[in-house]
Length: 334
Image (cartoon, rainbow, N blue to C red; front, side):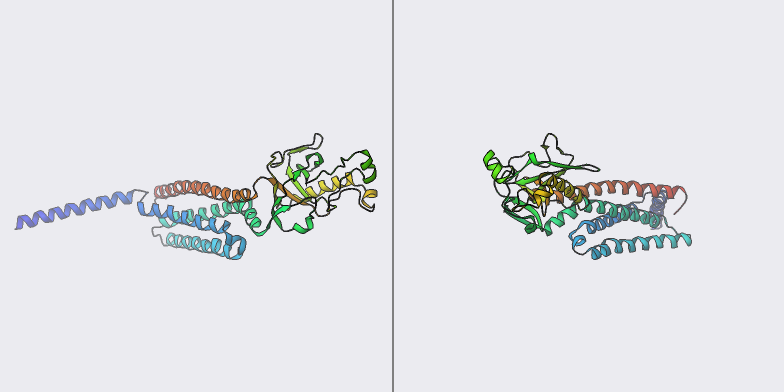
């Protein structure tokens, strides 16, 4: 009995010694599994939350609510973990895990906020604005007036509509701003000399105004009447999506004003009845074949950008967490 009892005690002591050795090895390693996982998973979760709130529909519909959920709550979490790490440092308590987690969380917050803001402005802002604007079908650019379609986002023009590339006009500023009217009939009188002498050189549209324009940057040559903006060279395209960039719209308006001044000088413009075309309420469009596809592409590009940003952050966060654990371990922090 005593021999068996002694053998059991010896085995128990041996097991305890092995356990102490394993614990010692683990404490001597800078990368313990649970803290490393926490320093990776928690910042990634925070990154996803902040990024989602920065480009989700809530940002467009209720920006204050999105800011509270996507920035206010994560800021509170980061501040709380940072305060815990600082308190443990003051008490000379082990703070390696808390300090590493705090740094990784702050990195996630900053990276997600910047990435979401860029992605939102580049893709999702336009996508949501197109959802708010109206879509019109079978619009006749020669009979309809732009004032009727001020809320248009996507427009399908009638079957015989085209881009009048021969009427290309440009305005040069920081870039070459190109514009050409959308027509369903020629603007030039082609009925012969007698008809031209009687009615004038222009074939005025029924609306008496040229209000629908295709635009683009650095995609035309006024001298050669070359116009390659959007799908202008695609004979199957007869639709447009609205220009949403407010900062460039004035340049296109100046181009149209130049076109009007060239074709319709003051003496002609004041004549009655009208004898030359005007552009009273010009609307600017990107010429496309499928407006729905173009709008959906904005959302798809936003999701692709989010996916790439997420992958890059996960890789960065893993390296950051492992590096911080190793560095703090080397300087003797527990």
